[in-house]
Each structure stands twice: as structure tokens, then as C-alpha cells.
Length: 405
Length: 235
View 1: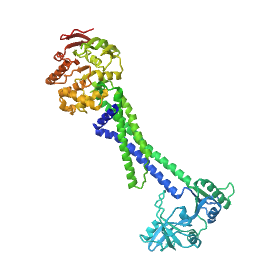
View 2: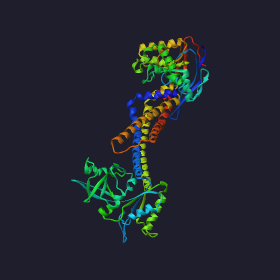
View 3: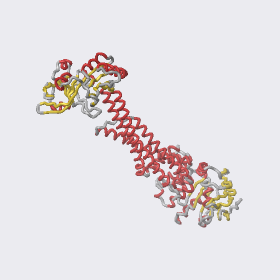
View 4: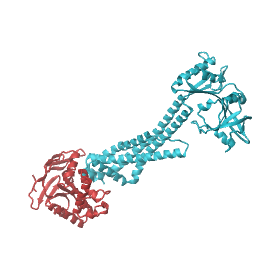
């Protein structure tokens, strides 16, 4: 009974001073809203990164050449020319538990069609590359083993390249020139959009691996080998087998450095994930500080309110209000600020998160946890910062309070 | 009718000011019977307000015994005193002490909130009291829309609403014009005739003359106790 009374007394008191109540709430509204927006942005980044790494395949191993070491002078990583196509074939044949092995080479070239030209990355790939990168062909067909074996001058182009060279025209069947050599376009890739690192995954031209090696680049080595492991649990075992096999093939004695690197996407994913978690926590804690400041605002206003209403407290006490009655009244008042501010904060936080993901390149990801947490925290803030002023009010001496002008 | 409603025995109130003891009340003995209309008079500094605060259970005496309706209340805790005030005492103040944010009706109903009375019953009882003081049509108005006399009548309705044993009126006409003063004093006389016990603090002799008993306080002692046909009751 009295609780219900106290709530209506508290709401009436807040309504009688609307502007002040709203300004007090603003601290909480901004605090709760900021927590929700910041965490949803953080979670969005995290989700993005995780998704794009997962789309690459979390069960991928990537073998790249190490740095060349000529007479003690070490070049950049990847500069070693020791990784060969045979290595990829050996991995395919000798190691179990793997689905696909895709060796690649790549380089940048100018691509020309008619009077249009475009600079892009040209990849030499085998048919398995399509499966390993989960590519799909929008129109035409992909590179076949026959294309690779007979070093055919055929190309599959990404949608960015297609748009820049052909406009709206269908490129399939047309001839383009890569590095001044004629290639026939046999397919256009389905758009994959931006990668998590921000690069355009559609800005590529794919040609058969051997064609690229022998006709375009004139090299015998390869740039990387992508390996898809059947079961994620076998990642470490397979990685070890690959390393042993390659050391054997490259005649690396015990104690000598590898001339290649095997990287594991799971570890990259873990690193990225912990980085983004840190980012989320960082953003969230900055926002939480503003919630704390909002709480201090509540306390400040409640102190003023108690002083202002000293006489009212005196009257209520003279008429029979006990310590608990006055305490409850003021405590509920500050909790109501917390609850109302929290609700408005959730509303604004969620709205702003949705607006951000709608109108900007950030993806936001709203989860229940920060909403529940920040709302609970705002109610708790109201309660905690209300205790002192409420106690002060409840302790007032009725005689003094009645005399207060 | 002749029940001892208030019985003060050797009530003292001592303040410590600047390391010195100052007795605001220096041993008061007083009995007030049910249905009495007593006026408490005295110059400022006589201990009038202190006695009023103790009688009204807003304050505790330093020593002595105060029996209200047979119950010892001199040494109750703050919260226990609050309950006693709520049940037994109705206050009327010089400056009305109404809450300005709420309507006259809600002001009258306020003691019932702390008595734990339900909303519906509160409204009925408060409206009844407002009707008794002739302000039924003003129930929804806020205090600042009422005249001084009307405000004091609202305050009297509030003092009566929980059917207390005693009405304590502290200079109830101090802020009123002559006409309103007359109205309010008539109201007190009517209440007295209905059998209510009233204690009135005033410094105006003609206001005190309305009461059936006059008590004069001087230097913390009752120096005169006189009334129309009332036996001297100093124990």
C-alpha cells in the first residue's frame, strides 16, 4: 500500500519539476545509450571479422615461402622461390584428412579491353581454388584442369573488373589483354564484396595456374598453397605433417630455419576475436563511466531536492511519516529517475545503433546482454546514489524542518 | 469526559548552549482533561514553543513524565513518536504548512496515507472533513488558489481527519485578517462544543479568551492557570 503511495508521490514530485527531472535523467539516458551503441558497434566489428574469417574457412592452412637468405642477407617474407607446384601435389598425395589443396601465384597487371584499361591482381589458380574460397560463377564457367594442363589463355574476372572494362555488357566470350597477351573471358565471379581487411574481393582476374606461371610471369615457383583440412580438430596435426613433409622435400636439416611458413586461420581468428573483444570492452567501459557520472548527477539533484523540500519533509513528519516513509519516498524518486532514464536510454541506444548500421558502413550488432546490463546498472545507480540524500531527508528533525524557510 | 488526556509530571527541557545549561522548561506539571479548550500564553522566550513541541510529540523532554491518554510517551523513539502524532494529535500551524503541489483534498488526506488507510476511504473521509469546514467546492484547488482563512480551514480539516484526541494549534490566527480570525475562532469553538480537546498557543489575550482555560508560561514555569469554571488543576 505505502509502496504504491510512495511511487505516486515520487512521480508527482518529478512531474512538478519536469525540466529538472529530464536534465537529471539525461545523464542516465546518455550513459545507457552510449553503452548500448558502443557495445553494439564493437560487437558488429567483431561479428564482421569473425564472419569474414569463417567465410575464408576456419579450417584453412596457408603455406607461404619464407624469406630468401643469400649469404646472410635476408629478404622480405615470401621472397623465397623454394615453394614449387610439386610441393602442393606432394601435400595432396601424401597427407590424409585434407579436402583441397590450391596452389596460387599472383601479380599485378594492366588488363585492357577495347579502349578501357584497368590495373588489377591476376591470380594463377587451379580448379580447387573455387571450392576452397567458396567462389561462385555468376555467368560462364570456371577454369578446368584441362585449361591448366594445356596452358590455355582463359580468364575468369571479378565483378569490379567486369564493370570497369565492360560496363553493363556481358564479358563472357570477349577477348581481353593481360600484360599484352590475349585472354578469353570464360566466366564472371559472383560478387563477394569487401573483405574484413577492407580490400575489394571482386577486383581480381583468375587465370589457370600454369598459364600464369609460364606465359605471364615466367616463373617456376608458387606464391602460396591453401590447404583445406577436413576436420577443424585435425588442424594442428595436419599442420605438423605439412611442415615435416616440406622440410623433407626442401632438404632442411635439423636446426636450420624453415624456408616456408604455415599459417593457421584459427589462430588469426582467435587473435582478431580477442582484439575486438578488447575493443568492445574498451568502448563499453568508457560509456560506463558516463553512466557513473549520470549517477552522480542524480545524487546532486536529489541533495538539492531534499534541501528545497525541507519544509515538506517537516510537514510529512509532523503528520506521522516515519523514517522509513520518508526514506522510501526519496529513494523511489531517485530510482524512478534511474528506471525512466534507463528505459529512454535503451530506446535511444537501440535506435541510434540501428541508424548507424543503416546509414553508415559500420555494422552494429545489438545483443540483449548490454541492454539488460546497462538498464540494471542505471536502476542500481539511481538506488545507490539516492541512498545518501534519502537518508539525509529521513533524518531531518521535524521541528527544525518546520522552521526552515 | 473528565478523563486525564494529558498528564505532565515535572517536565524539564534543558539545552546546552555554549557549554552552559539553559532550562527552557523548568519542571512543568500539567493535566489536561478530555474536552478541554486550553490556551497557552506567554512572552517569547517563555518556553511556549518548547512546551508545545513536547505536547505535540515533536520533541522529547530531558526529564519528567508525559502520559498521553494513559500511555508514557516521554522517551519513545522518533518513529514511535511519529505514530503517536499520526494517531493522537492534529496540528494547525500559524503558516498553515500545506503542501503547495497537491490539492486541498490530498492535503487533508495526507495523515491517512501514513495511517495506512486505502485510497478510496481516504478520499471519502477527507472530503467529509472539508465539507465540515465548508470547503467542499474547493477540494480540487491547490493551496495557493485559496485565501488565508480558507487555507487555515483546510489545515484544520487535515488536523481532524484521523480523528485525533487533541488538536494542537500554534498561533492559528497569526497570519490572518480580523474576519478570518473570527471565522477560525468560531470553528475552534464549534469543535470544542463537539467535545474535541484543543490546545491553543497564542500571545493575543482576546484570542485566549475564547478558550475555557488560560495557562500563562513564564521562564519555563506555569505561573498562572485560570479558566471559566474550571478547577485549578496544577498537580
